[in-house]
Image (cartoon, rainbow, N blue to C red; front, side, top):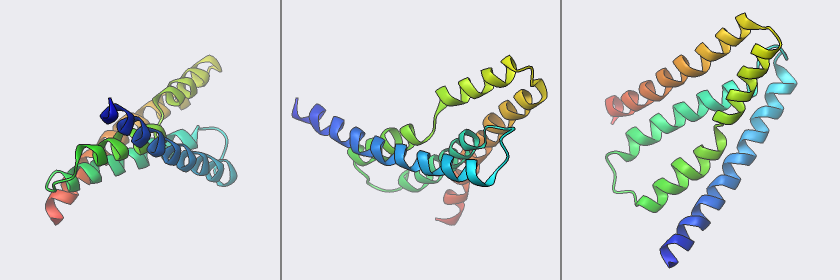
Length: 128
């Protein structure tokens, strides 16, 4: 039972960090980018994909505890990236009849997200 309690504390701490980071990215996107595309969601999903690929590649060769992986991957990055917001933003574009922006948004988030994750993973494997 104590292990579950420790895991929940790690998730809550990581989740708080990820949520705050996501908030700042959204604030910056709203301030500096146009309002036509949901840039905040795209940026957090791409940054999260890049970060998870980099960390996965880096931690794959190290003896990092499962608790640290839980804190980083599910806690911080799980709350930093946001599939539910991505789904909402995509549905909103569809609902507004913005089908070109919808397709653009879907492709950017999915294709670039996978490329960022895989690219970061292999970059770390190449460099280390």
